[in-house]
Length: 152
Image: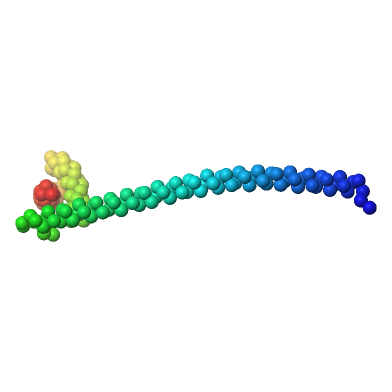
């Protein structure tokens, strides 16, 4: 036979189950709401991405059209449009780096020249005077490189 204690235990378990079901239904509704909001946000972002892609395609096409017009203009000018007119960016960079190195050497030469003058006055370092001739040649090279850069 069923006892009163068993019925109360069963009633407690049913009550706990009902509370759990209500809690889970609330969570379920919250999750559905969050999912719906997220889905709307995803749709909105997809729309934006597609708009950006269309804009990008239009921009690319515009650039291509402008380049084609520039090519036509270049071809229409007599004596223009040779590959020698194009500046090689790597060559400019290398020349710039060489010039920077030469400028550093020139600064060192100026410092050495001041030291040489002091030594000459005291009678020291007469052998180092030969080095000054080499630095003069370096200075000439630096000036030539700077003149080449002025062309650009």
